[in-house]
Length: 234
Image 1 (cartoon, one colour):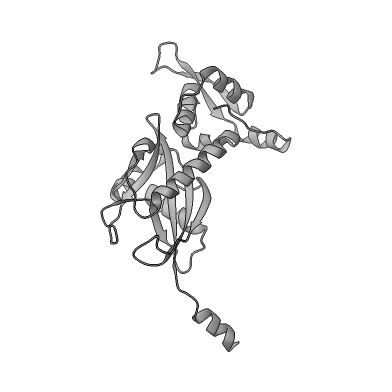
Image 2 (tube, rainbow, N blue to C red):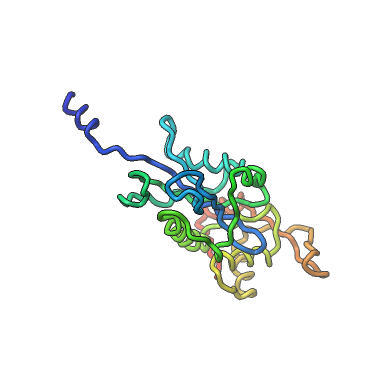
């Protein structure tokens, strides 16, 4: 037993953190929530939102706490991304961080909380230089999002409950940073049979108006159980 105690006590001591890559969709742009650091090292520079893991906190609970404290949101789409353990990644100390990426509906978040923290939504196309290896984390998260959005309906997490097909196409164009053929996109998305057409139109963009749709999660689950494979042409 003494040998075991010594084995643990002589082990290296590292700090463990969780960093959140929080995506939102607004003004036809994919955006990232960033914050200015309030402490050294790199105080005043742009950063992802993160925190050290609390002593009595499970790793999986930390990003949920971080997201709630900043946005007031719970029960959002979140996925563990990667464990970043480069020895010199943080000049302040030996810090191992686990990154998570989250997709939220910007309309639902608490904008007052965001302002209180000094956070800001920034377009992916105008992303500033972030501290440490945070830009690499964002790039990894974008790659994951782009890979999964084709084969999973996770893109709907970024939209309000009802949306038009033009808005849905704008979302996919923002994610993939390219123009998508309108006809092929609509054909492939409607073929999935996971959208419900509503008896309501959005008439702010045009006189004719575009019908609203909603994502039918229950139908998606039923179809998946039968071997359905979600696939969107982009």
